[in-house]
Length: 420
View 1 (cartoon, one colour):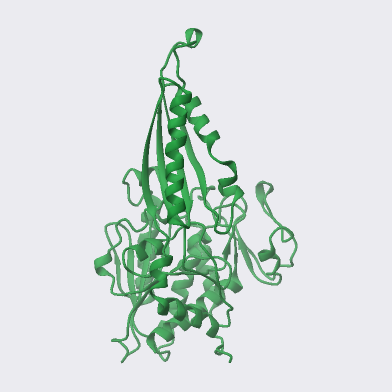
View 2: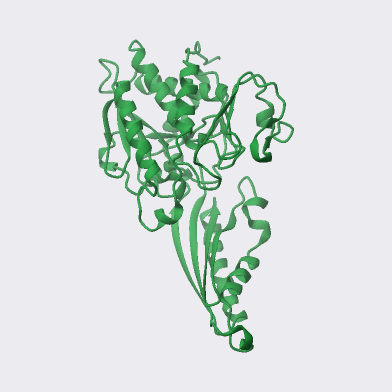
């Protein structure tokens, strides 16, 4: 049986223009500031949020609110007569990652891409011979940065897609749908995106983060995530007479990192394998610190990783008599799988909407987290939806316009199903 409906006509050029305009506005978040309690962590996010909220008001969305924490909450009014249908929500984040430069983004549009390597500045190349997902997009319109920055499809593709869907529904009042909430958040990339979410103002009992990748990807499980902050205290001494006196904290920190299992790093794992990842190392001979991220899909394996950190820390103290190591563990987010498994309708409606939009779906674990994992923890089941973005957090990030269009069509079909 074919569930596909007649594809709706999406204003693709308007969607592209919207995304390119958003991407050009730098909105990188800052992990250090976010961890110290600054929210949003950067002023550029605040400026973007003000402009985006005003654009949403001009579009005709109702109840557009920009709160004191710079969350944007808005609603697509229900089709007359369907106001009492169940509401659902769509969520995306407007900050971009700090892993690559993110200011002065200059998006490049490659229309009817010929399938040849895409040369970017600074020696970066998108090579379809090394990227099967890119190779499958010959003839598509591909959007990239110029190579000097990341692109920002994570997650401005989600924002542009949601607002393209919203505008389409507002312009097609004949399409039946219930009430729909829209939530745009700052600081997702720092792990603090839901720290101040206006939970009491959300009506919907289910949300969908529009923050995925390849067309058809639906994600209902993510890492359990902890961070470990290690403080190394040594003993300073004059270098000329340090023998038997000095304990070098910087060397202790380096030895700790060297003791982590190399085969359990992000660059050595994929699929369902977890990892240890040193994010930052700082220090001097007297004091040093390491910020370590721990990731695992299985909570029992995560407990073993936490124990492993403690064991290595005690080993470093034994290796450097007179030095000390303090360890602080903090949970960042949890795997949303168990809670989403208990809400099958939320996920099944997403699969059905994609099929009606002509998209073949498949399940894939998120090797990371989303605002959806935090919302799910807070009691609102929130699976993740594809956007058509690829190579996130890098200068070789790219976006497929065809896949982005499929995302918008899927969201429209989702609105119909929730309103049925």
